[in-house]
Structure formats: C-alpha cells, structure tokens
Length: 459
Image 1 (cartoon, one colour):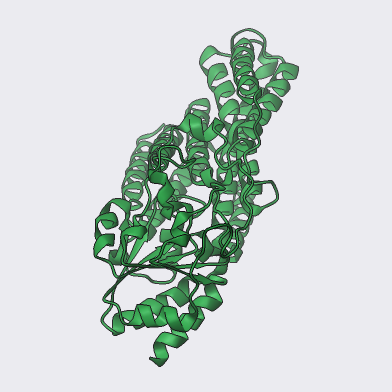
Image 2 (cartoon, helix red, strand yellow):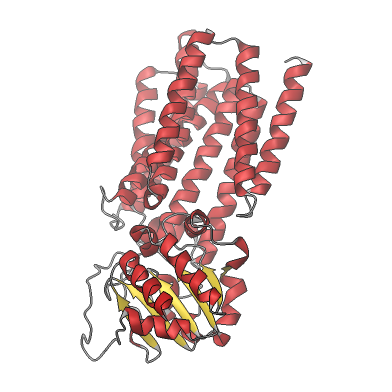
C-alpha cells in the first residue's frame, strides 16, 4: 500500500468518524450522511485504483446500475415504508459481506487447508453475513406485512437456535483448520441462513426498532470481517464503526423498553392476540370528541405537547400536523413535540417524519427532557401512539412493566387521535383511553388533522 493510498484511507476514516458524530443530531444528520457517503466513495475509488481488480468498464457499469436502483428506490419509497427499506439495506450489507467470504473460500479451497487467519475470518464473515441477510429479509417481511408481525416461538426454539449456533461454530472451526470441504461449506451457509430466520421470526412487531438496530450492527460486523478477509483497513474501520454504533443503539432501544436483548429475542413480547375494543365495552367508557370540540380545546389553551406515533406515519399526516401547530403558535400557544425512543417501526422514525414536514429541531424533546413538563401542560395531543403512553407500564404485573413511557396522563387534558380503541403492538388495553381527562378523536389521522386545521383556522 503506497503513501497516497494510506493518506486517502486516513482521510476516509476521519470523514466516517466525523460523519457518524454529525448523525447524533437531527440538525446535522444530513451533513453527516453526506460526509459518510463521501468517505465511502473515496475509499472505493482508491481501492479500485490500487487493486485494479476489474476493468473500468465493469466498474462504471456496476456503479451506474447500483446508483440508479438506489436512487429510484429512495425516491419512490413512502415514508411509512422507510423501516422496510432500512431493514432490506441491512440485508444487502450482510449479503455482500457473505459473498466476499464465499468468493474468497472458492479461491482458496482448491489449495487444500485454508490459512488459519483467513479461514477463521471467512467462516466468521459467512456466519454473520448469512444471519444478517436472512434475518433482514424476515424483518422486511414483518414490517411490510408479508409475514405475521407476531413473534413465532415455541418451547423448543431456544434449544434449537442454541444447537444450530454451537453446530455452526464447530463446523466452521473444522472447515477453517482441517477440511475446506465444499459440501460442508454449503451446509454451513444453509445453517447460517436458517439461524437468521429463526432469530428474527421470534421477534414481535413491538420490538422491530431493536431488531433493525441489531441487524444494522450485524451488517457492520460482517463488513469488518470482510475487511479482514481482504486485508483492507478502511473496510475494517468502517465496519467496526457501524457495528459499534449499532450495538450502542440496540442497547439504548432495550433500555427504552426496560428489557434485555435476550428478552427481546426470545421473550415473545406481543404474543397475545389483540382484538379491537369498542366504546363502552364492559364497565369502561371512553369519551369521544369531534373536530370542532378538539379544535376549541386546542385553540384556547396555553400549551400543547404533541406525541407522534406510527399511526401518524401510516396516515402521512405530518404535513397537516405542521399546519395545525403553525396555526396554534399564531394564536400564542406553546407547542412542543415529545418523541419516544421506540415510537414508530425503526430508531429515529418519528424524527425523520417530523423533519420531512420541516418541524423545527428545537421543538423536539426526548422522553427525559419532556416528562417533567407534562404536569404543567394544558393538552397532550397524541397522534397514532399507544404503547409508549400506556400508564400500565408503571404496574409491576403488566406485560410492559418498567417500560419508560411518556407521562401524558399527567397533563390537564388528553386528546388521542386514533382509528379505534384497539391495542398497540403489545396486545394490551390502554387505560389512558378511559380516563376522565381523555377525549378520543376517532378516525384516520390525515382527514382528522385536516378537519382540525380547518376548525382552528375558522376560529
């Protein structure tokens, strides 16, 4: 590796680190994304020039085709489908790393026993890459509704997955140090893919933010393993950064739900069959409100905290919500947004949604910042959120016991915009719906929000 290449890799690594730091804030996230993309482009160009692995005709053709597919997908995907896109991108990353490991195995296999270092990294890269690829495909299917969002578990699952994992370690070690049999290698690949399917299929819809961040970490570790296989330092660094960031994010997501990673993967959260409730079911009665009544409450209060949820994303109502908030601010109402760490279907989903609607970053507050302010808030306006505002989380015998929630029930008034009284992903009823201070504004978020905007404007 010549001096110019080393310097280019150093610049690329620095851009990766700075770009990752910029991603920590919504205000600088776009800049960070551009810096990280530039770092990867620089690393790719330098590597291709130094290695001269293919003719430039094939390289340029691949870049053009890949860029067209990526740009088209990114522009056409709906905001509600962003989690699916992130999930499948994780799969592509893991699949690419697995292909690198497979190609290197095919190249070295005819020479007999694999070099110890390369053999170990090849098998590790194939294991992580295979699990990431198949797991991400399952996650994509769950998010897209092609596969049931309920966790698919049974009493033998943990034993089976543990047995497969131990078997993979044993077979991988045997292939790496003793016999690089093509048949054993294909069996190893199949078992890795099955392991990924079993692991993610056992995760319920409520835990998808954790699954997405964990698979993102896996894709980074797979890339780092590919870097060791190829002896490419910048790939090792980039993969390690993604892997570490994904693990940190996964830990934060688990903390936000007060659950361990093992519990997320094997606990079967959300297994109860959820059925829609109805107004006045049993001895519980929910008060309903129409657009005119809700607009009256909002327009003549002093402070509003908006709590967005996945229902907002499904209805694509973020722009109408922004119009409502602008009208309220014109009337002197103090408007803030409370964003729960696991709101939506992937980490940061609500932040991305609100940023698309040009909601100012300084109006966004996380759970720790906003919870103490609810007791002094006139109206908590909940748009499509459920489990993250369920006060049953404070009960030790609840399914979601200990999960940090937004304390909206401490506000003076609560307006919940929701299609029905049906439970959220956790599959349990929400007592917030039946409190005296709560008013249910039933309907899809977008037309309901448009009605609110019209009523407030006419006041």
